[in-house]
Image (cartoon, rainbow, N blue to C red; front, side, top):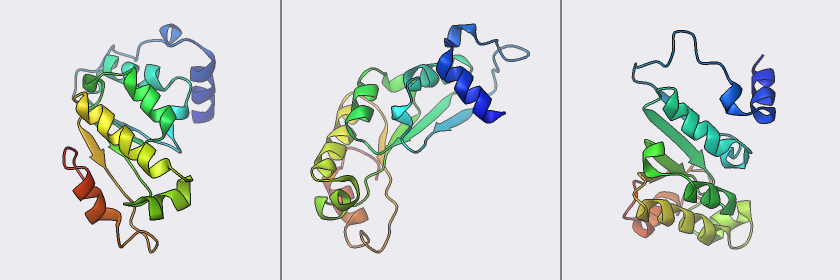
Amino acid sequence: MVGNLVNDAVRGPFARRPAPAGGVSREPGSGTILGGEPTLHPRYEDTIRLAGQLGYEHVITTSNGLRPARRKFARLQPNDFAYVQISPDGGSPATHDVVRGPGTFDETMETVGEPAQRGFDTRIICTVNKANQGDCLADLAADAPAVHA
């Protein structure tokens, strides 16, 4: 069932989707768009905007912050989200780049900064593990005082 909904959403325009029974909910709601990497979905921007149109008041997304995510965030507005979470795999190139590849820590931190400068509520989340426990939280918080860490 869910697979069919996802496949249909990828193939067809959102404009053809029927309205939810009873119309758009006016009740406060929240939705979290995550993945894998949600910004890689071809309809990511449409999905974010549709969530707002359907009455979701708190749309949250989590991203690894690499270049595809930065391009998608550049085409969205701060009011499209309650907040954006960027999830580096460590608090320094030494730990992050081992997971994502050389130079990706700097790329991810640029993605943290750009939406924050545009007025997005931008937060850093990091899964602490044995490889990054020495630098994950303290280094990130020190490097990104303008965002919530």
